[in-house]
Image 1 (cartoon, rainbow, N blue to C red):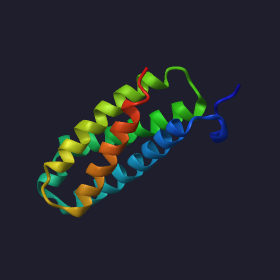
Image 2: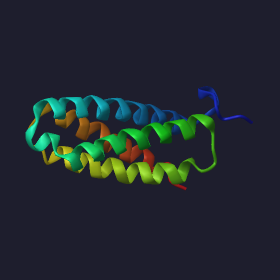
Image 3: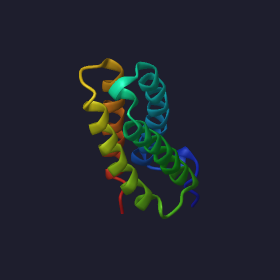
Image 4: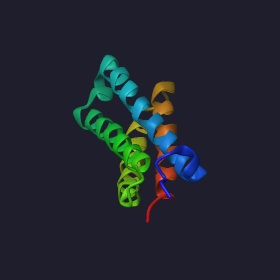
Length: 117
């Protein structure tokens, strides 16, 4: 059976794909916000981590959409990067834009963590 169509995948996989897709978009939006804000928000390591998080989330969603058997391995890496990105964003202080990124990164880490093989 083919698993590359939504109706053929489990709800858990479809939710993880959605979380990865949202995390990808929000990380990219947050990078723009951080660069505009400047200061510690624009620290090169912080920006690089958010960019890596966006990239790995897109790769993870793509692997699940393709129905590859290695998606569990990719999800494991994605969960770890998302956890680190959430920590980095949380360290920026009480900022609603940063909290938005923290929340989606944590949700994505949880979803991806449940996909690991």
